[in-house]
Every structure is written in C-alpha cells, then in structure tokens.
Image (cartoon, rainbow, N blue to C red):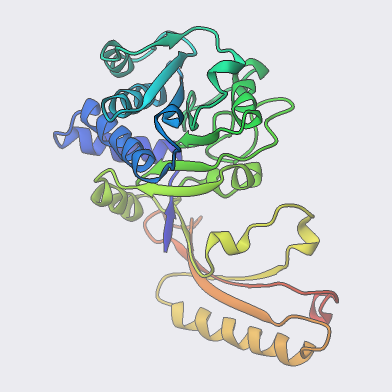
Length: 318
C-alpha cells in the first residue's frame, strides 16, 4: 500500500520529528545526503570531464537541499556549478548557502549545460504556491535541450504538489529523468501533468515512519493507493472515456467483508455478461480509505474495481 501525503501533512510529520528532538538542519542534511548518494551511485560518466553537475537552487528549503547536495558531490570529486535563483529566504537555507565554497553563477549560459552529466532542480519544491515565469522553467528546458539528465528534488519546479497541475504558461515538454522525494510520494507525483513529467520516482526515507503512521491514525484525508501499481494506471494521452471504468462501493469500517463480497460478485457478473469477445475483462480490485462526512474518527471504506476495455463499451454501462 502506498501512502500519499500533501505538503501540509508532510510539514506536520516534520514538525513532530523536530518537536521530538531532531533539528530542521539535520532533516535537511539527511534529505540532501540521500539525493547526493543516489547521484554518486547511479549516474554513469565517461571520464572526469563528464563528472560535471549544474545545480539550480531556489530561495526556500528546497534550495537548501540543493546547496547540501552540491557540497557533498563536490567533496566526492564532482565538478559542481551552482546557479542561485534568489537570495536565501529561510535561516536553514542561509546556513547551507554559507557552507558552499564552490562557484556560483547569477546568469547561466548554454555552455554551463553543455557537457554536464546532469542538472539538479532544487528551485521550488513541495511548497510552491504561485506560477513561475519562463525564465525559471526555461532553465530546465535548456538542460534537456543540451542532453543533460534532469533530477528533480521532491518535485519538478513548476508542478503543484497537491494537484499535479502546471503552475506556468507554455511549460517544459520533456519530463525529468528522475524525481527524488522524501518518505512518501505526494499527490502531484501521480495527478494531471505531474504524473507524466516526473520521470522515474525514487522515494528515500527520512526516518519519519512513525510520524506518517500517526497521520494515518489522526488524519483520515491521507490518501492510500491500493490494488494495481500507480505506474500501471498511467497513460500519456486520451480522455476519461478511454481510460477505463471504475465501480466504487462505500461503507463504514467493520463491513469490509461485505464490500469485498459485493465487489467480487459485480466483477464476476460484468465478465460473465460481456464475455471476452472483442473486449478485455474487468480486472483488479482493492479497498481504499476515504474521508467520512459523518465522523472524523471513523473513515469510510470504498471498494474500487477498475477495468480497461479494448474496443466495445460494455453493455452494463448503457
């Protein structure tokens, strides 16, 4: 089961960790070390000249992660150039920026991307609340045009973490090669354009397992993905009528066995009614927790069945 948390829920989990004695600085270092380690282990280069990285850092804590990633990779033998989008706006980011001793460019040229093994996007993370300009996402386009691998910290800059929608005009057409997020995926990694533009998704732990578990107990709005993998539900185009069909049966806790039984009965009936000629059978099912309007302490359950049909709309849909 995959748990998705919103930015506010992630901040709540981090606050619980900080209240328990872990500093915000330590969390930032932990996150950045996970990204830097992944890059150092997995990025294949041809000689020292290709061990070049251009880091794009923003003013918030996402930028702080970017400064730590840059510093660690420089210590490990990479050539790192940092482009600082704006002056640090948080105390933690200011502290991480002060520790960076490498080159910083206020304006990037095409030559700063050409020959680089990859570009790290640490401009805007899960806290983005406004549209970004072409001058910001254009840096990502320059990176992809030059053939650089693009690694996004938490989420690609310009994507809304809650909805997956693009917060820019005429946005980047190419997806990131990799998005590294922390502890749990976010809704924007799967919804709308965010699912198509994230690239591969890596989730690295931050030691917040107990805090996220507490969210699941206390906050019933936390989303849990069940059944097929999210990758199996992704599609690159089309519209809602050619994506498939879903049947949702809802009820209270304690009646899971009823939902399972009715769900399986409906799947059997649909398959028996339609047969297999010219169609693909209805397949897959699972139980998902959803908010209850009656009680915040007792979330409802929903039995969800999904199906994909090759050509002919099934008779039961009408």
